[in-house]
Length: 115
Image (cartoon, rainbow, N blue to C red; front, side, top):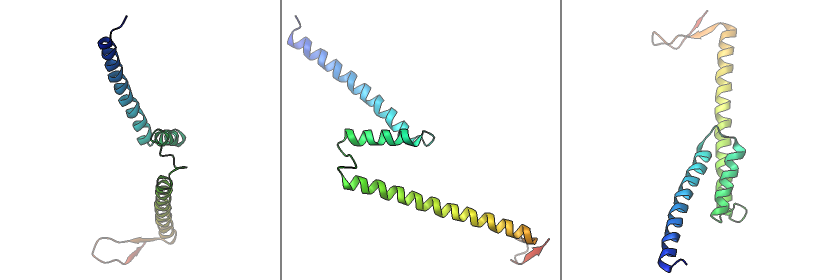
């Protein structure tokens, strides 16, 4: 028969081990969430599991849901802007090569040099 003090020791050891395992589990989830090469579905699944564990499901919490939506919109806008810049740069280089013009950075003037 296990005495009360022995039972408390066993519970204490179990709690310490569970806390240690919980720390490892959180590290794993964090590494998945921050790994930009991990599939987006896996990262989203991990994020939603965290919301569930914290009782912060975006379905039930408008602030969290709105924050996620705003973050996604901000990222989409930044990506669209960068894409437009890259297209403009590529088009400008193509146009300059097509008509045979090159900007002459040396000499202090900004006049084009015809090739």
